[in-house]
Length: 327
Image (cartoon, rainbow, N blue to C red; front, side, top):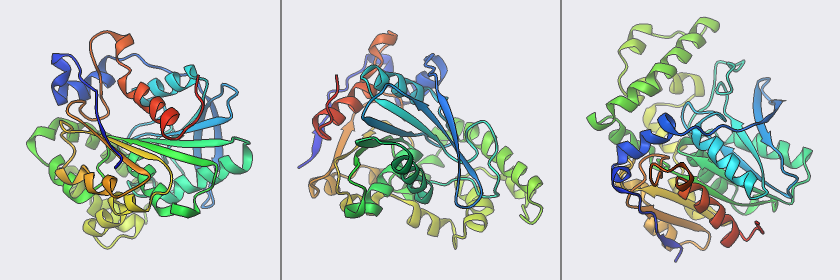
């Protein structure tokens, strides 16, 4: 039964979920050096892939969370740590997240795995890696899990496994949590960039009839989904989007070693985002619940060299469960 008992025990201030969530983006100084490759998509858009090469036979594909990028601290930290272990990495900047707006009205959403599939096919066609591992954070983690389950037994043999962290695998219930007062600050941070991006899209694409008054008044993800996700991506309603984009229904279909790490004090997650039953009934899907860690935090202390529990955990799973040889 692949449910792990966690050994993550941070010092006292980091046992507060909000503190742990905010500490990484505000105080960690992680930066990585990348070599960027721009690839053109089937629908005449582009993806920016940020590589860090070490001459390895193994490539780790990193996928960021909502409104993140390859510059996000958790992306840079994991890039550097994986490079230290001798592994190549590539950060997948989702549409509109690489520092330059994408070319289409549609950007990305929580379940848009066709973009992941396109990038994977590009890597398989143009590079000679023996092993590829997908690692996703938050929204990127949902994409990782959903992709692994959707492909199931049809997954390329080069894709050896996946790891996902801080993932709202059940979007409908997670959005109820996000709407609560405890997450008001986070919502304001997300909405500042998301509303600006939607306004920019409305300016570039006059055929997209945006109700700007409703956009300015929006306070919930559901409001933005009504205004953007539903008309742009062709969903029937926000509820239809939640159902089709959530990764939870796909966990039982995963056929390669895949780990989900979620913290109990992650204020973004509902009880439905802790899939014990799915892990207990699977040979390939592993679940680890930590008592502390916040949302994509997992900081241990004020000592920078000690704040690598998540990075070490990812490497350990690759080594022990995906069985990739790592220095």
